[in-house]
Structures are given as structure tokens and as C-alpha cells.
Length: 308
Ligand code: NDP
Ligand code: OXD
Image 1: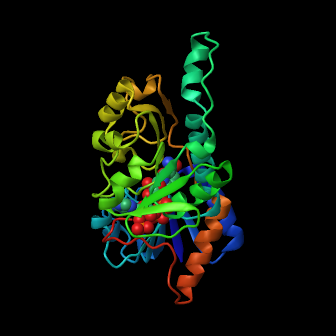
Image 2: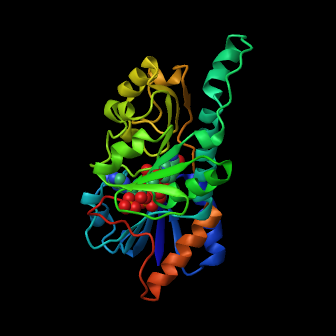
């Protein structure tokens, strides 16, 4: 039974070592050395090969090596092959940690203080108590909920927005397009943790920014395609937004002349909010595979009709 790994090769070598110990029945092959394609049953990939169904005619499951699946062209994948996304404890924990870091950076005016330091200016900004800073998360999935839990001890009023209604203790939950403006109007720091779909592409645009209170902050850890870059720059330059922490951009890395590199009110990180860790990813992968091999339903299967 062969599994092909087509993602970061450094972490792939760790997968190979762990699976050799834990699952000797699986023959691990690293892309592009996939051997006899007819023997490949499972594929772990960030971007699968083109025409994967023709290349691996006996493929049974495609595992995304990340939590997001927008990088897969879901429509082009064989309809009978389930797509499983990566939900593993370290990936979830590191996202919650990053969201807490970014929220605190905006809350405690780090964007301003970095500028003041560069200008050798000793200047204080009055501290806003956390109970007066409302944090709203778009996307109440695995990562959105974990991030809210991590933020809870700081005392921010917390809110969230999702497609279907949710009840989360201590979080004001809004659902659906009709509720978006009310959610935004009561959000001082907006965090995007949505999947990128045809419904959410470009959702962080001028109209969304205009619906936020003046001076709000933005954290985008979803995907670059959620954000209309020029609208962010305009909102920052006009003061409608006071700062942004951006982890994902449409083209990664962005070109040298991209305004995010040098904008004084943007903190940019290179898509590192969260990372799949081989040890815990292998555990989750194996548990899921063993369930499947026993005829039980797979966990974390992507709903292709929703796109996430
Ligand atoms: P989930 O699938 O668990 O949750 C997605 C959430 O978004 C759900 O609450 C869903 O609503 C909501 N949603 C989807 N579409 C809409 C819509 N049209 N309107 C309102 N809400 C919507 O995803 P995860 O939490 O696991 O991951 C979220 C995203 O985070 C990933 O897709 C990926 O893009 C990004 N990510 C970024 C990383 C980074 O390092 N920067 C790392 C990992 C992931 P409902 O609950 O009603 O279905
Ligand atoms: C993911 C990512 O989706 O790293 O897991 O972006």
C-alpha cells in the first residue's frame, strides 16, 4: 500500500521516518519518485500533480498537507476521491498563538511604537483597557474558535461571524451576509480566518473597512485572496484603519515593489501564522487512515459543494 508525499520535502523526510516506525505496512514515497503509479492509494499534497486521477488511477484519498484547500482545484479532482484537510493540534495551537500576538500588537499600538522608535521619538499613547477593545473573528471554524479561546483571558469583548449560526459561550455570534454589517460595526480589531471560496474572495474590501469603527485594526491570516490590497492601503492612508498585521498575500512572495513591504502601518509576515508539524500531523493522519481502513467515516473531509 503506497503513500506519496508531495509537499515540503524537509518535513516530508520527518513523515518518512515517523511512518516507517509507526506504520510499516505503508510504503512511503516522496514526490517525484512515486514508483509504480498503479500502487499509489494515498496522496498527501499541498498542490497535487495535474490530472491526478489519470496519474494515480487507484488513488483512494487525497490528504491536504494544510488546513486550507483553496490551493487545490477541487473541481478537477476525481469525484470519488475524498479530500481530507489537515487539522492537527500544533497547527491549531500556533494559529491561536499568532492571532493573540497580532491582536495584542494592534491593541497595544505596536505599529505606532515601531514608527516612533525609527524616528527616535519618545511618545506615549494612552492605553485602552482590553474590555474596551472589541475583537471580532470572521470564520468560526477550528482555527477561529481556538483563537477566540486563546484571546479570552485578556478580557476583550469577543464576537464572531460565520455562515451558519453558532452558540459559543462568552462570544457574540453573528451568521450570514445579512448580519455582517452589525458584526463589523461592533469590531475594533477584525481577524479574518475564513476559507477562500467564491463567496469570500475579496471580502476584505473598502465596503467592509467602511463598516468598521474608524481607526479599527485588521489581522489577515486567512488567504491573500480575501483582501483587496489597494483598498487596505487606501483605508490605512485615510485613517479609517489604524494598522494591519498581514500573514498572507495573493502572490507569495509579493513582488519587490508591493506596497505591503514598506507601508508604515503594516506588519507583514511570510505565511507563517501556523504550520503543520510532522509528529502531530502523522498521528492525526494515521488515526484517520486506520478509521478508513476499518470502514469507519473519515474525519475532516472537505465539502466540495461549499469549497471548504
Ligand atoms: P473551517 O472550515 O474549520 O472553518 C471555516 C469557517 O468559516 C466556518 O465557521 C465557516 O462557517 C466560515 N465561513 C465559510 N464561508 C463563509 C461565508 N461565506 N460567510 C461566513 N462564514 C463563512 O476552517 P479553519 O478554521 O480550519 O481554517 C480557516 C482558514 O484559515 C483556512 O481555510 C486557511 O485559509 C486559513 N489558514 C491559514 C494559515 C496560515 O498560516 N496563515 C494556516 C492554516 C489555515 P460555518 O461554520 O457556518 O461553516
Ligand atoms: C494551511 C496553511 O492552510 O498553512 O495549513 O496556510
